[in-house]
Structure formats: C-alpha cells, structure tokens
Length: 106
Image 1 (tube, rainbow, N blue to C red):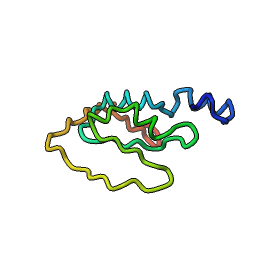
Image 2 (cartoon, rainbow, N blue to C red):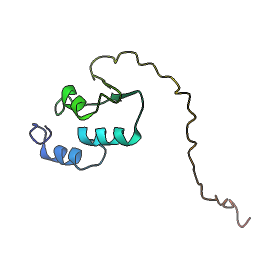
Image 3 (cartoon, rainbow, N blue to C red):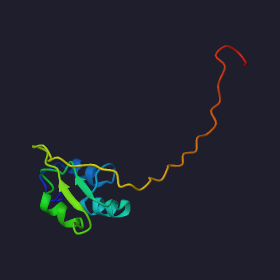
C-alpha cells in the first residue's frame, strides 16, 4: 500500500526505511515475541496506506483479542487487570557516576 500511495518518494523512503514505522508484519512479529495473554490494541494506523482489516489479518486473533483503534473516534473501554502472576523485575546496570569538582580539584 505504501509503494502505490500518492505520497512523495522522499516520504515513502523515510517511512519504509525502518526508522520508526512498523509494517503490519513487523507489528505482528513483535506481538508474537512479547506474547501478551489477553489483548492487543493496534494504534496509529495510516489512514492512507493501511486498512484495519489488513492489519487485523496479520495478527492471530485466535490467541488474544485484537482491537484496532481508529484515529477519528474514541476506542471503546478496555479493562486492564493484573494477571495475578508476579512480573519479572528488570535488571538495570548503571555505570558508576563520577562527580566533577566545580572549582578546582576535589
């Protein structure tokens, strides 16, 4: 859809260049990797170069609920609830900070 759109070639190149935009297939691959248990909300679909039914087809709605959010109307209420399972705590390693003296040596 992007290739056949009326958008300028520089914009098509930027969007398809992998810097910030996901294709439907990339989105579905990411969702499979994350593996949410209950539902996924597809956001910010291009009105010119995508269609909700095309985006939905790339996601496996048998495994989880898939909601497509429209840009021109509110998305219905979506309940968010805890699964009851503990979440893995992220491991973050910070480099030791070095304090520099403001006036001369410390």
